[in-house]
View 1 (cartoon, rainbow, N blue to C red):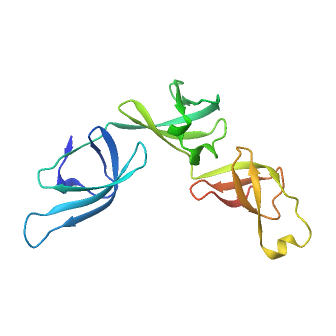
View 2: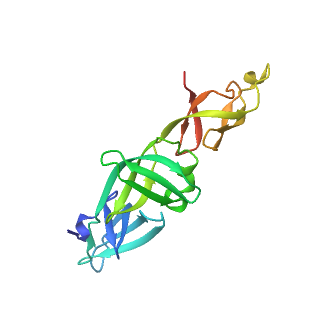
Length: 188
């Protein structure tokens, strides 16, 4: 299926030159002279680069062959990260670059993630926006610390470091916003 200039809109996934993109900005321009055109910013679903692209009447963009699968993170062998399809039990391996440093620091064995496939090949990993992780190391709380409302660094079971309130102690389980990398709350 092909998309024409009139089909384009924000959020639409398209394929140009064999690379899948998502339209992040869209502007229909109708100049006083000449034909109308569409100015867009598109983000690569493979490497995250953002490009500016102008579409004129007659330009076509293909619909990408994308499939999203729920998969479970199994383990990291040092070179690759291993995931298992939760329905077929098929396993795939991805490099650390494919998973992304922002995702790796919150990945825990057994965690379910969404993996996007393009033409049968895994291209990106999406972790849950909020995860629960145990604090493995943080400074102890001292009397009077909590009155200031300050924060201290805490190392989590995955190796990530986040700023937490003084009342959080080693062994506590906390909720973390994986998009912003911020402490949300203590799990009761």
